[in-house]
Length: 102
Image 1 (cartoon, rainbow, N blue to C red):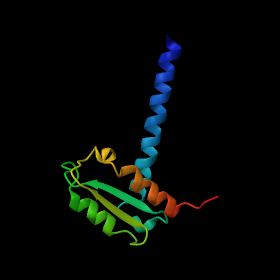
Image 2: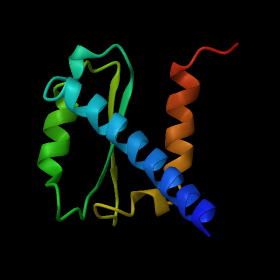
Image 3: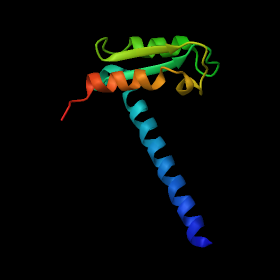
Image 4: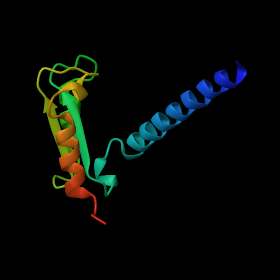
């Protein structure tokens, strides 16, 4: 029983650590996306009631135009953009354009 409990704690800790790293990287460049050489795809639902669309537009507008992209997802809010039928297509397109083929 305790082995299963420890496994659950470890897996949860791993997920939390990954989220913390992603948040750290976001805030490291905040509020200036030009501070990174990476391509950035901001995905923002047009029905987001948590973060106003204007903030997403402002952040995306602050980046290097050739490397900073904003996709405003129609009829989606703060936590459901990934359910849009084109979500993975948009992500995949950016990755194919920006990652070197080996």
